[in-house]
Length: 78
Image 1 (cartoon, helix red, strand yellow):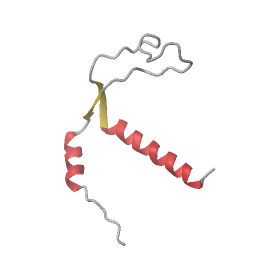
Image 2 (tube, rainbow, N blue to C red; image 1 turned 180 degrees about the vertical axis):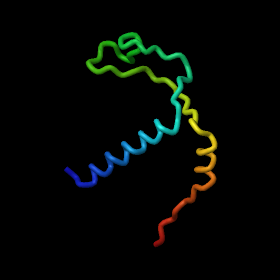
Image 3 (tube, rainbow, N blue to C red; image 1 turned 180 degrees about the horizontal axis):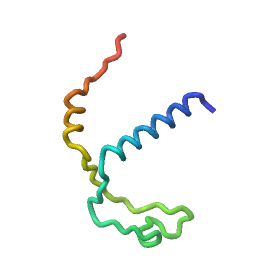
């Protein structure tokens, strides 16, 4: 196992947790949540939902605006 894979998994975990903490995820259109009817392929062994859209609504708009305002791009020297 690559030593970097543990770091990568932790970073992905942090990104997803921060997204869930910072945004309220709302449905954009009607989604069938039934495990059989809402399945893209009911004959498959694995349940995969049909494609759908979601809205990410900031939980605290002022904090998002401040973060975007304070964001700076870091360029690599070379």
